[in-house]
Image (cartoon, rainbow, N blue to C red; front, side):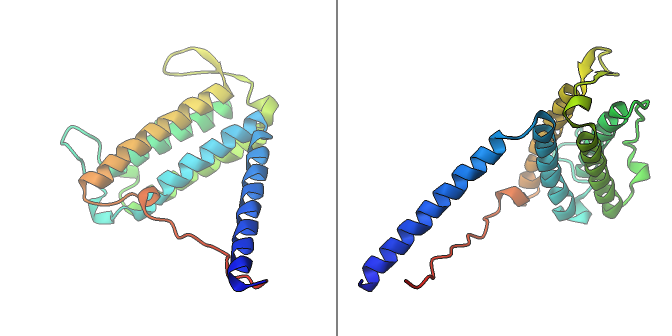
Length: 193
């Protein structure tokens, strides 16, 4: 077999393996239980916001695109406070309001709080499982009854909205958000046939 044909066959096999792996991945995702689906989304938005919290320059943590808006740090604290709200409700505790920037005066403190809020929420979701996440809870803001799963999805959506706002903060500050940066592509084509 000549080298050109061997390379073409190798590339075709690599593509076929990639397609097979992608199909298996899609199948695995479809098999998630309801609480696993919530946990996956919770962790995904958490990963994105934690990456921003760690990446954004400390000297810009008080940056606001406009004077009436929250600072970058205040946006993160607001998200973490909402996460805590979910966690406390899920544990049957009275929610506390702990978004005060005075409690978190440095970037390191804000990052630690954001990480803690997502980690604690993830532990609760995993511990509750499918049955526990169907328990009813009272939304303190609206007074309505809803399942913990629904409350978790509301908090996840809320975090996603603030993620979008923080993307704008990055852009206005002349920076590129971590998720928008080019990813390194790893190819394994250097195979000998």
